[in-house]
Length: 192
Image (cartoon, rainbow, N blue to C red; front, side, top):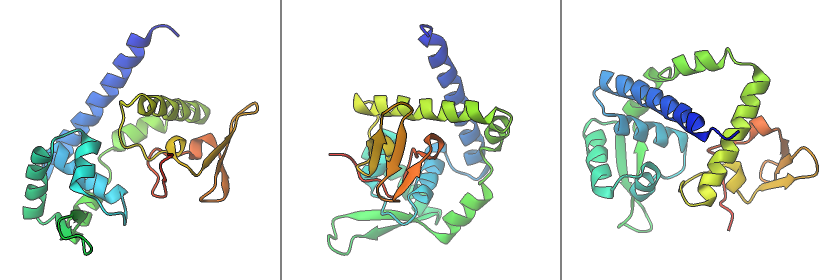
C-alpha cells in the first residue's frame, strides 16, 4: 500500500470521533475532556500509583496545565492526592468512591464505537488489532510514543518468529494469541 495519506486521514477521523464522544460525555457531567481522561487513566491503572509526572508525560501536557485539572478534580471530590509514605515530597492520585461511581455511570461512553466494531468480521478485527499493536510499537521505537505498557515493549514477552509468530508471556506463563496481546498491561515491565 502506498496511499498512506488515506490511512492517516482515517486515523484522524477516528481520533476526531473519539474526542467528540469524550467532549459530549465530559460536558454532560461538568468536566472537560482531559479531566475525564485522567479519571479513565486512574481507573485503568487499577491499584498502581498514579503520579502527576506520569500523567503529564502520558497526555503530553505540562505539569502546570495538568495541576489545574487535578485541582479541579480534587475540589469535585473525584480524586484524592496522597503523600508517599517513604518520601513526603512525592504525591500520587487515586479515584475516590465518587469518582468510581461517576465512571460507572459513563461506562458506555464508547458504545457507538463498540456497536460498529461488533459488525466487523472477527478475523478482520484480529488482524486490525495486530496492525495497531505493530504500528504503536514502531511509533514507540522511534520515540513518538512515551508510555506504552504493551506486550511488545515488555521484558516478559517472548516471540518465536519461525513462520507465524508465536507469543509467550513469561509473567502469566501462558501462550498468547495475537488478539490477546495488550496495549496497556498492569503487569508490564519495560524492556531495558
